[in-house]
Length: 368
Image (cartoon, rainbow, N blue to C red):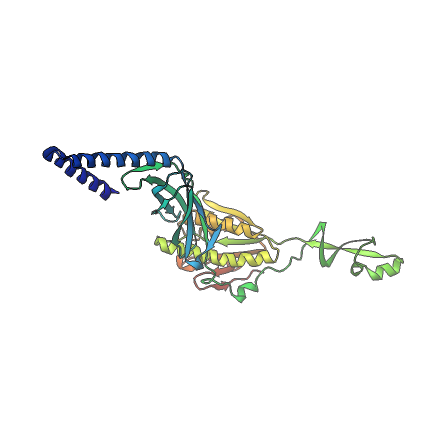
């Protein structure tokens, strides 16, 4: 656009020179024609700019990093009868774990009553919560001389990039330590655990004959049915150690978060498959203590990942672990996910926990 303006200015100076010194009517006609074209371009820009919109959206609710490439979508639309010579949209993408902002520009022409989608690919090797927004939108005339800014929504659009499923696979040893059924039963709520009888009652039409207590029914000469008990869920807790002992590069921080969350997702999905809700504890910089998140369904996993990836990693040595130990003294089962390469050599987690070191995916401790 700057080159076009310089060329127009140079041509105008040459034409004016010929008109003044050579008294050329051709030069005068050319000057009038150039002014007319500039006026038409200006009017076109003003009229079209009131009927052009631009919006940013994400192509998925979340994406897997195994694809390495994710996309944002810019939707541009012209509802006017005149075309748009060029529409320039400047975008900004940021990661809460990174201080910088990636700026990208996309441009396209629009015909009358035209609507288009422009896709912006981004490379994401690790799990992240990418925030994108529109920084500026400009409408340009057909000659590339004028540009008028237009209003557009600058709200952030977030895309959750889930961890890769390949780097950290929870091995068979970890699977064998998934918490067994509880041996404690409720004394107020009925259930379907056939190993424990809640109460005995008279038979009612529709009852399963497999639930009949035959010895007692024979003795009383009437059908007696067993109601079974409901096991009380054991207190399962997962600690995610997101603290780092020393300063590392932004890439190392992203890699650490990716590895921790990859193992956590594997473990969480297995617990949910077994209908075992659990609590997650992780250290928060703002609260200066552990925060608790209840995980009951797969949607809760995405919320927790977004929370981890939207905040900088706390600096310290085993902050999640020490905060947990200062408050809790007895939990039925505790999984501790950490990376020993980001810990002080003097740090040694409790052997009573089921410790998962993402550095080498080793399993230690005893959950029973």
